[in-house]
Image (cartoon, rainbow, N blue to C red; front, top):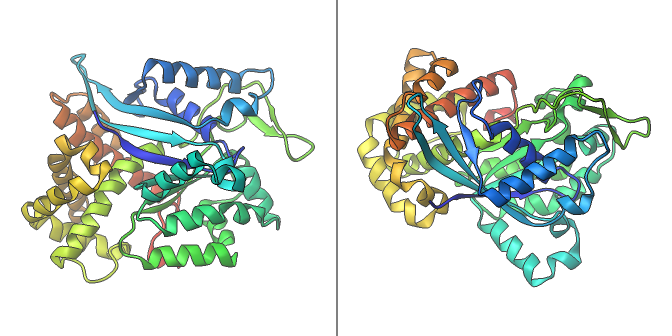
Length: 382
């Protein structure tokens, strides 16, 4: 099975591998509140479990060298039905490379560093981690966070990638009373961030731009020590916060990006489709033109590794995505995510599992966006 490639970006210490280890632990079991699980090749699963064990142990934090190596992790999304069948509709291939490639000129200048940046420039999905501690320092007037992000801004500006910014250690910011919208507003006060943000939104060929608050270990697992630098463990069980949201957003944002592209070619929407008030019209027109949109989508598969990775189930899943979203807009209601999880567990084929999965992901994201204004960046937010 081919994989949807996702490139993970962030300076050393931003928590990239910690996040992936937490994501794996969260999704390694098919939990009732998630509805699906992931499988990794045995050696990858063993390594992430080892990293996670060191992270949550009471004996301090892992050696940074353990977290600094470039690695690829293949997360195969699966469900086990009530009948005991396992269906695996798609795989996400996370490239987690050492943060030095982002901030160290010597590392970037190597042959391998050049290959890493070529992958970044060709990526359809970029997962960018913002260290919550550095975000807090930025909110207190320290602009070094933006300096570290300048190479990321350049990479996103040069690509058509969907970009998910993860604000890590969100439990710390939450405890200080910050919301996603408040953090984003403060970031927009910086001229470099503002110009990156505005220029990205002016483009019509790019994918979604999200800011997702996550905590790899959850509220109360660790608190900021007296030095203001070190995280001190409190002896609690980890309870990861929102770590699965970016995983679910990949498929939804892939389909939304392609819908925007195909609709533009069909003349469905003349204005910016990222404006919320135009979405009902976009999906309403798309639902009436699905045969034509399917033909256009078929032509895109060869130029998109992400589409190629799901081509066996793509067309029917795309139909299900458009039809269900249009129904939600028409009825001004959404199917309860719990009901969708229950329906997914009754799937009798890989295609049915994929169709229900994209509907579930879309519903969960809609609930998440409603609860966290500012997470999905739209032009009207400017």
